[in-house]
Length: 198
Image (cartoon, rainbow, N blue to C red; front, side, top):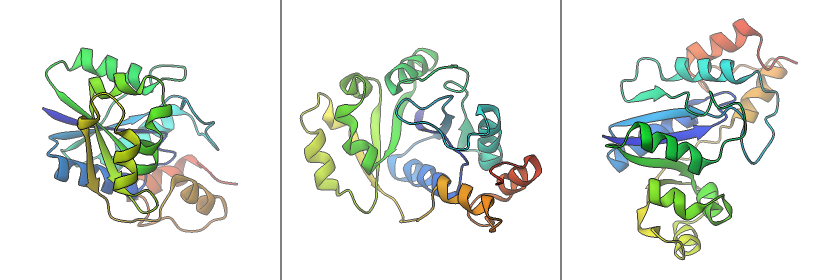
């Protein structure tokens, strides 16, 4: 199978994540996209983190009913900061017959040379790059051209959606509606569990 991997804090997941997974699946010919909530991101502190179990459940609710999406606990079950290369190594061991594509935004792809063992990442998986405003395709390819296996980088178009998890959290904190910014089940869970409230 061709399997896409969409990692992140998903704090909370929103329709931008789902559209990214949809476009990657369609444009890169993926059979399935795994949403991979991190336990603790390696490069930043999580703001207003309700905890990994809530974030995993939010992801499950967000992808429920879509046969092309599923949630993996491969990072959630590692109670420390986990590097992408380590996650890909574990996935490669558990799914040796699958072709893996790690899905990132253009800004993250542009920073790939600064990541922990970037060439090892490209040895384990293709890099599916969602092209967005602000980081041009040419800039990404030029920046990554010096890496071994740079031919494993596949750029796809992504509709421009100005939605972020931090914006969702801010709206919840001040009582603004989030309907249509997140799946209905995610909205209901956030309200029921009292997540992100001021």
